[in-house]
Image 1: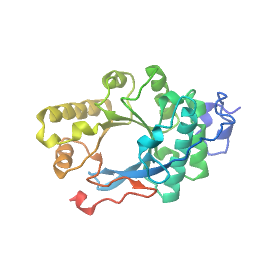
Image 2: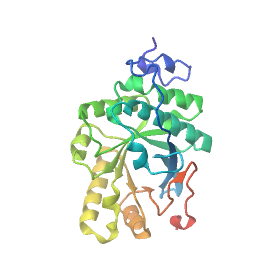
Image 3: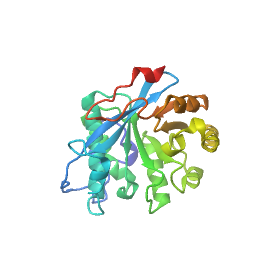
Length: 263
């Protein structure tokens, strides 16, 4: 049986990866879902850095309507299906920038086994593995933080990028950072909102940027809605941004950047 360290090799052997039993003979989900893709821009280079895959219903219904159907019995199947569908959709749309996929840490049992479907999807749809970012929300209900840290470390070992989403909205962000440093830290949109007018928000974000620079982490500000927010954050050293100011999520399509957003 092929060792976990060999997964990144494009030799067709990823399917031989060790499994935990739950990976085998999975019953299909009893509901369908799709994705919208929202661009992430690099304002420094004025380019699209990547796209976040955001779950939607098959007719564009909200993420909440889909997630409401996820439970303990189907969480693993849903998480695995999300990875495959996100990669498939990105490949079919011709995306070759980074692809950010949200995952459910409580649905991952053995990282080296549960990542198998992602490798297989990347190979099947010819999507560059090194362009995949796995992100988890800071406020996610994590039953075992050490398990999450192990997942992140394994994903980095396999060559994936990692990100913590909604940083500043949860309760364990700094403690988590003390034990694991992701590639990207996404500042919660509540801290971004009207930051140009709020000295407390400015101080907090400036502290996050300084801390991240010391730890070698890239900062991404999400939820940008105004030019003033964009300009303050850029002046503070944040170049990766995401939000309606640049583009809304596009259902089953690549979001187009508003030309005025670069000016």
